[in-house]
Length: 135
Image (cartoon, rainbow, N blue to C red; front, top):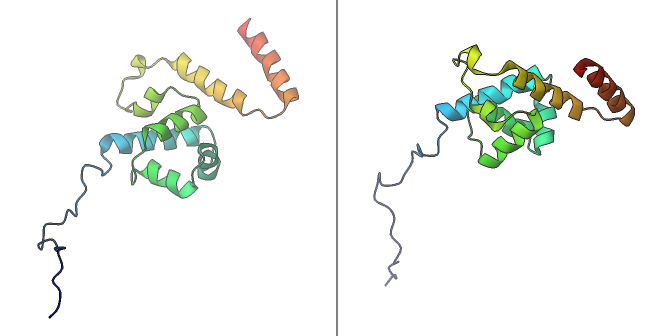
């Protein structure tokens, strides 16, 4: 006589197939689109930004297209690499221009480019230029 197993198979249709709670939503897609826009604005390729975030370019593409959700840690990494406040990733394009400080955005972009300078000589030149512009 065959032994009966104590494990049961789930009844047909009871398995949870749809994970809507974990599926990307409109905010995830907005954050991804903003990361892409900032990346392109800075002249970075998928590979460039992905490398600086320590992820694959395929994963970054999934974030940008809204296929995958970004974790809080990944949002922080993206904001840091792109030199923006994390709130900038949530900014809707429908926000009127007057509500966003253009000078703040320009300072963030300037900081991004300064941090990308690799040689001490070029950094020294950039500092001299900034000092002249600021006076």
